[in-house]
Length: 154
Image (cartoon, rainbow, N blue to C red; front, top):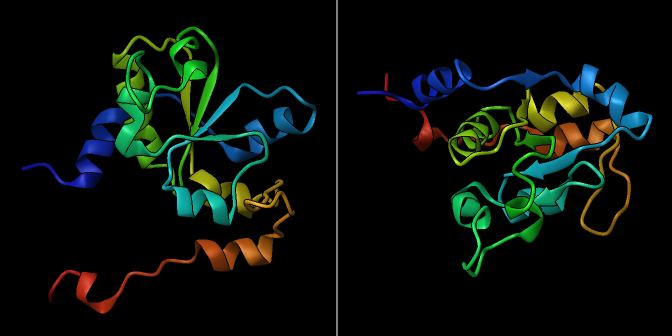
């Protein structure tokens, strides 16, 4: 039986990653590909990279195809476009990038360490209103909230 981290490790064999530090340099000079954030809408609203679009992981495949309620034309038409996939820690984005490659996307990478790494590098973040979110506030928003009942029994 495979576990979540096993699935991520399997996908990493096929998916390239870019670090927040390397990609951040490009971003700050305006060299920005399509930024696809696959977190849930509430996560995206709390903070996200300016200019990114939100397509939750759960509807990604339908968003990448025509004729669905979830279709995102920018994605459907972007199979050859450079895309950086973003999530909180860099795991969901690896899985999403792997699926997108299987669907014919040829230039898709995952943001290693996710938005947490982006925040650690003190790169720009904003909330749903477009207001800047500083790194300290980002740390609070991105902090793990695993409850006791969610932890593996000892």
